[in-house]
Length: 93
Image 1: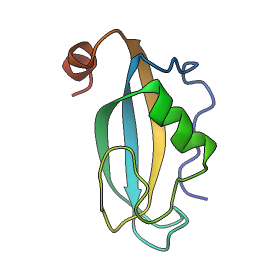
Image 2: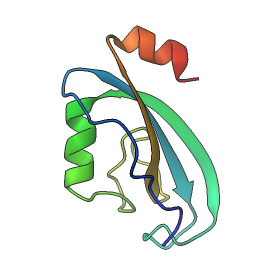
Image 3: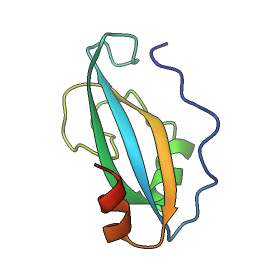
Image 4: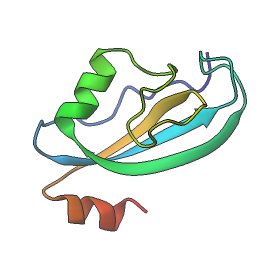
């Protein structure tokens, strides 16, 4: 079902920052379509973990990096931790 999610990202610390890579797919909303793009953003560990725990990937309207995008998304990489948002953003481009 789409790009497999790697099992080797870091254990998430709630108040640390992480560079998240999210891949977008063409429909349907199960991440089985073709890859159409990739987005990176910095988020703290708590919302990333909540997103992963809720199994929100590949659903409409539940994304970490891009709000309101009409395509399904899946997290493919989490890099970090960083002590601040600024440090994360400097390394996340």
